[in-house]
Length: 208
Ligand code: GRF
Image (cartoon, rainbow, N blue to C red; front, side, top):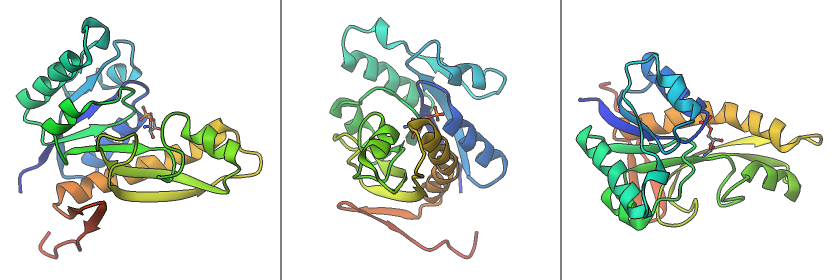
């Protein structure tokens, strides 16, 4: 089977992208990164990829008057590079239906909480403030809502008595780096089927 071409959209640190790159190199994920696109010229993710042969592109949101023009430019880059799955990895922009319709069912995100708990920004702080005993991370398909798309995989981590948002974020991030490549591998191996809100995961075929 041909490798699935993925396009990663990221705005910041890029540790999830690194975990994806590592999974590909280790043979745990049968994919090829066609492009890494950042909306932020200062993003560490661009520096992180500088020494690799992965194409990195900066599409600065500030250069566009309207969101749709920005999204059209991102979509065009993804299409030029034949991207089949869009992977949001710390992408700090909300995508409109204009973009989502163009990649319907083909956009994934990772969120640092057990959805539907604590959607939106500062999910780890929300979990600490709420007094939750357990939080974690969720990989989901992206729909037009805020962190509301069908859930693919989740991993729980404990919230400890003396946790701050920072210490909890670190624990969750460790789980993210394992969960996101696993979810991507399920997609790339053709094992995900979305039925309404539910994502069915089929058994691995034995001929692989
Ligand atoms: C992660 O915590 C992820 O859950 C959230 O944004 C953060 C990105 O971190 N969506 P990194 O840029 O991958 O290090």
